[in-house]
Amino acid sequence: MTVLCLVELDGTGAADASLRALTFARDVAGPGGQLAAVVFGEAPAGEALGAYGVTDAYVTAPGQLAGYAPLAWARVLAGLVSQTGADAVLAAGTDRGSEVMAHLGALTGLPMVANCVSATRSGPGPDGAATWQIVRQRWAGLLLEDAMLESSPALATVATDTVAPAPADAPATLTVHAHQPELADGDLAVRAAESATRSGGVSLATARVVVGGGRGVGGPDGFAPLEELATLLGGVVGVSRVVTSEGWRPHRQQVGQTGTKITPELYLACGISGAIQHIAGCASAKHIVAVNSDAAAPILSHAEYAVIGDLHKVIPALVAAIKARGGSA
Image (cartoon, rainbow, N blue to C red):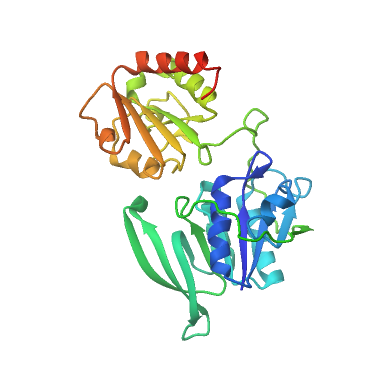
């Protein structure tokens, strides 16, 4: 079996969500199967992809296709399906992964299954197409659905909290292919480019530490201590929906059902009540610590530790304590 996996980049390396997708894809390919990565941009070091069992990387360099163009990316994937005879095409269930795979489904006329937690090929169906047993998340992960997919190839996104990123037992020898995209008119009609100030660093979806702020922060100026704390911890700032609704912070920082689903080692939720939509976005954090003045806030029932107090006093004290230890935690 040959499985293609779209690998998104975070800085110069593969994004954490994509490493999780590669781990999932390797299991789908099974022993003796071929796992190929599709990369738009500079390819990560061969050792990094090879460690996850990738045998071939098809790389479209920025010179051929700069920026993020979802339809063009899907067109490249469609061409690679024909070139490689792939049995499945997978991507992380991120904003980009979901958008590109939806375009791929439209281009190929094939169904696309979102937010899978398992996928197993069980044999040909009545019409000769491959049959897949699928388990996927519904209702922001509150429900698991068992489904059967008949499709050749199978198109799916991987729920970002499905598996932890795990290298293969034995690394593979990676062959990098410089891929020349063949695009159609209009494929580049929608294209986004990251500014230099945002192209680097850690993203919310892949951060190992997220410092979250909610209504209790009080306003735009109240996020300065949270920014400082996030920097000291090597993380990023996330926010609740009400913060973006008030215009205090941009939507790209929103954690929740209608924002970004995060899987950090630590989520420090400050002044966040913990509505069900927000919990849907942060429930996969390994450790949740809440700072809230309301001892009855719903977030506390999901937190491993909680500090009941004024975040405007707690966070500066925490920042001072970290600095006293040498500037980082």
